[in-house]
Amino acid sequence: MFASFDEWDLMDSSSPTKVLRGLRCVCFLAVAVCSVLLAGCRVLAPIPIPVASQQIAPELVQNNDPQFEIGQPQPVIDGIGWVVGIPDKILLWDRRVDRHKISEETILATADYLEQNNLPHVKVRVNQYAPLKDWKRLTQNKTVAWPWRYTLGTLSVAGETILPGRIIGGDHFNPFTQTIHLYSDIPAVALHEAAHAKDFTRRTYQGTYAAAYLFVPLWHETLASQDVFAYLEQTQDVPAMIEANRILYPAYGTYVGGALGNFVPNYSLPIYYAAVIAGHANGRMLSQQLQ
Image 1 (spheres, rainbow, N blue to C red):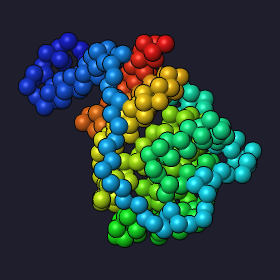
Image 2: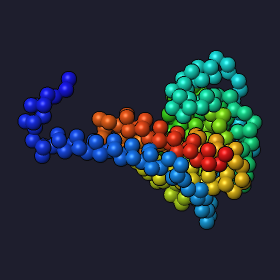
Image 3: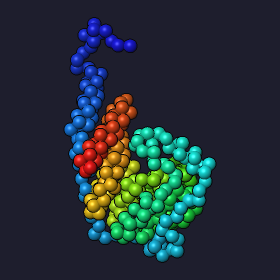
Image 4: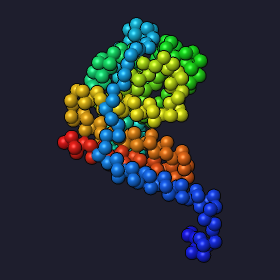
């Protein structure tokens, strides 16, 4: 399993293999050092998303549908979804992740954020499966150019249809339909998705910005999380800030770990988990400071 002393001695220290090993060690050390140095630091500074103007499709505001739609209780389906979401519950260490039963607290927190940020066109589907309605919203969302709507937009709605979040979970914002899909009963997560909606609404080329997310999601995620912290700091809601620290930092770690793992694919998994653990440590340190 391990190379003997003689075998290591015969290796050329300048060989590509040796260089790669060195780079991998550097990556591991970088993650480890960052985990220690960043503990208790406001990596995600509370910075609100600046909005000079909004790009809103009138058709999404003029329809008579309620802004919030809640899926009918389906004990068997929701029970399956809860079980499927166990890995994410463990990863973020919160049993409310992919709970598929959303409390009034989470809904009201989302509604307040949308109202204060003037986002009447954003639909919120609370544990609801409605692909036909989403397809209609896709055709109405003229703020996204039609080439993007009927390529990436179509694929996004098709993905939500074939892989229903009602079972597989996964809170997210779909910029092509301007719809927030909630399956977790965590206000901070809901606010994060609403912040994505705020970010996209100020963009002139929303389809291009959505396509960019496929390659550099860390940028979009940073802006959304920073806006949530700025919003909670403005409201002076300390319990909500503590919750946001505990859940948004490890969630952010999944994107940081994914980005770092691209440089060393063979070690992407340990780097991914190291970044998540660092997020947990940092979030808890910040929460202790608030407490």
